[in-house]
Each structure stands twice: as structure tokens, then as C-alpha cells.
Length: 251
Image (cartoon, rainbow, N blue to C red; front, side, top):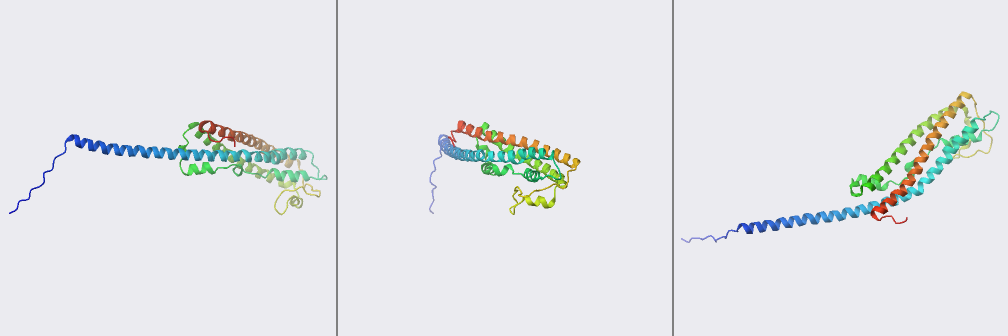
């Protein structure tokens, strides 16, 4: 009967086991560090891209916000001043074209969101990657900038409510047939070529309208001043990004 002999297996020493373990540990550790380094550079590339995009958005804001400031000055603040003066000298026998025209322009409104480019902040928020902006001062300043936009939008919604109440107060003094003559087919407000007259000059109604106009004017001034500051802040943030990251050389 043939006897099979098992080959002799030499046992490894503790030193050999330790060396194998050390090699595996080093390989895993180096892989871990390599992956971290790769992710670090990828995050830095993303951060750089986001900041370049923010600079572009802020540059557009700098160009657009003055248009909104101009509209508020012309339509709401100047309009309120003009209508207030006209209402203090009203007569049923005198044309009231200015009252019709400036009242209607004054109660209209352009929202700040139309004049602000928020594509980058929305993208970075949706991706949950605001953490990639490593400089805390830059990150905090950007967050505050867009929070202020939201606050201004909230104030504008409050202003719209005030204008709605003012419009209800205005209706009793206007003639319906004359009112429609200040609009075109595109619903744009125009200066009527023919004379327009008021339906009523009741002093109680006029006083209520004046109070409403003053309220609208006051909040409009506050909003206008905040938007002026916002335009300056857009420029300051661009300078900060350039200082901290070297991004945004003269736009």
C-alpha cells in the first residue's frame, strides 16, 4: 500500500507576518491618502469654478441693479412726490392727467429677483457644496449678500400690499372712462393726449390717498437705499474674492 507524504510547509516567522501586514497597511494607507489628495484637488477645482461663476453673477448684478434703482426713483419716489403735489391742488374743473398717469405708474413694481443673477448660489445650494468655499469670510459674505436679496424681496412684497390698499383708496376719485385712456393695447402707461378729469375731490378720500402715498414713498426710499448698498456690496465681494483667491481680475 502506497503511503502519501504531505509536503512540508515551512511556517512563517512572526517577523514575516509583521512585514506582510506592514506592506498591506502601507498600501491601504497610501491609497487612502492618494484618494484624499485627489478629492482635495477636485474640490479646489470646483471651488475655483464656483468663485469664477460668482464673480460673473456679481458683475451682472452691478450692471442691472442701477436700472432698478432708476426705476424706483422715477416711478415710485418721483411719482409719489408729483402726485402728492397735484392732489394738494385738485379741482373737478381742471385736467388731472398727471394724477392719472403718475398714480398708475407709482403703483406698479419691478421685483428685485429680475435684476439679480442667482444661478451660482442656487446651484451650490442644491448640490450642498457651500462647504467648498474654504475662506470663511468669503463664504459668509456671499451668504449674507443673497440673504439681503431675499429680505429686499420680502419688503417689496410688503410694498405691493401697501400699493394694493392705495389702489382701493384711489378708485373713488377717478373716472373709469378717463382711466382707460392712459393705457395702450400692451397695457403700458401713456400720457393721454386729451384732458382727463377726476370723478371726486372729496377731502377725506384725498387725505387717505395722501397718507397711502407717503407710506409707499417711505418704504420705496428704504428699499432703494438698500439696493444701492447691495450694488456696492457686489463690488466689494468681487474685490474680496480677488484678494483671497486671485480670481476676478478687473471685469
